Amino acid sequence: MIEVRSQALSYKGYHVAVEARPVFNGLFAASLTLDPTDAPGQDPVHFDAVDYFFEPDHALAYGARWGRMWIDARA
Image 1 (cartoon, rainbow, N blue to C red):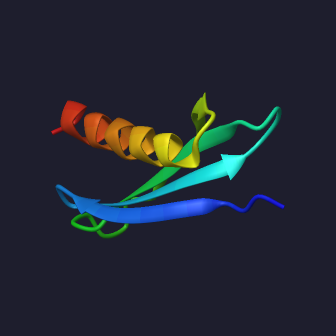
Image 2: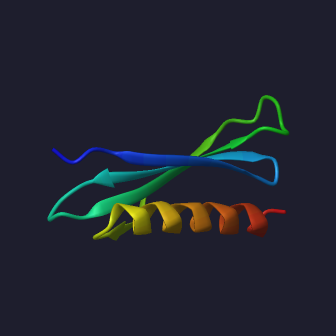
């Protein structure tokens, strides 16, 4: 069985948790949660399956990049 892979990073006041989840046809979904660490009381934002990849490492890298771009667009 293929397992979920994950990574976490901090970026501009957010904790970014990225997952590569196996889905269909051998693909991995890139999903992420952005939790603001500098704004108490603000809810985390979750993005499920922002894109699909054949390699879990590619899904993780894309999810992290996508999260940083989302944060930068709101800075």
